[in-house]
Image (cartoon, rainbow, N blue to C red):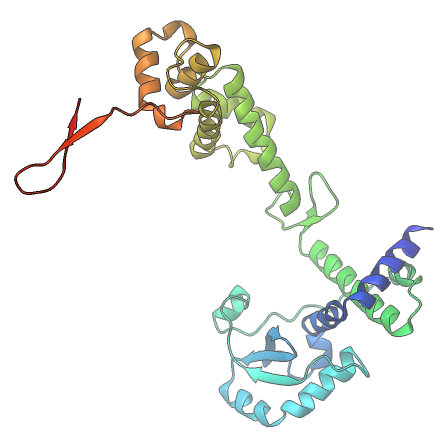
Length: 310
């Protein structure tokens, strides 16, 4: 089975098993095709979010907003006919604002940007058709085809706006970014592990030296290698190492290494006094708690218990 057939089969099963997914895919098309649905006044009002089957819209023109309240049934009908003939996906329209979901330009009460209509070549359209060719149901196949077309147009629009492929994968990144979100997370995890590796090899290494080494290894993440990030990696190592050391152990390699990591000193600079004081200060993070002194209690004149150490 080729790639288009596999994609089609997976999409077909997903839609069949999850009607809500199918509805959400169709509802997303409202935002992608708003200019197409309302070409005459798409710049006068715009979709904000969808709550169930309720489309929330907003307008920067209060008079236009009042007028549209009376035309809500016609708007609903036009949206449903344009996006999903025979399968209503919107039943109500409300007017309101959602500052969490409105893009930044809209928060400033400016009209939404009218995107230039992106045209796909015949080859690109054929490629989209192949991806859904294995879907048997005609309605589902058309829904998927329209969705894939929209994504293809969005991708083409981004490339035209300066977006580019991620340094490590084929996902698109904004103009000022080097990595996509997924690869950025993976690279940050590698950076964190690399910092720990330096501390494990030489726990006395200081931050500036670590920064230099990490930036040479991860030049694309030079902004991420901050003192806070290095300190976070060091503290994570300290806590994990301390949890394996018993209270009273001051001579094992593990205990000495922990002191080196805490004090950032080479082994030859550690004295018994430094070791004992460091482990004493850090005793409540060790594998077992230090033994507590027994206390005896006497009853003072005011009647409250008084704790007296032996």
